[in-house]
Length: 136
Image 1 (tube, rainbow, N blue to C red):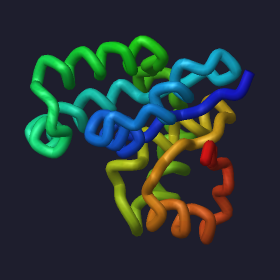
Image 2 (image 1 turned 60 degrees about the vertical axis):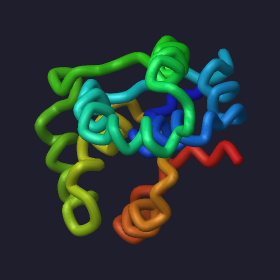
Image 3 (image 1 turned 30 degrees about the vertical axis):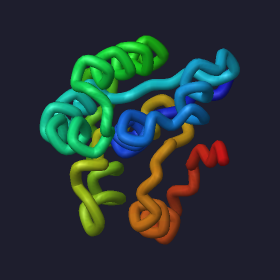
């Protein structure tokens, strides 16, 4: 079973576009999906934008979110070593520090990272990080 860390932008995209492929993938039993608990901060910060862009009701967004979140395991920072967190910070600091918890969890789980942020991917690859999940 593949271990995948889901970035907030994947979740946002799935909610906004009601992306059926992503929803199906998130429920696929051949993968085990994880996210840092920090993802809830990101969701809260961008709640209004998600609701506005999704073109469905707020209650439908919550229902869709509930379905998605049932397939993701959430991990607190206490699971990630200080060394892994600092390694992730050094990888992310020049492009987007807010991605640090996701990259740190990827390192801690020895997983692959699912992000749709192409700028981040290019930067991380230039730093020697290549553990990405590319479903399609």
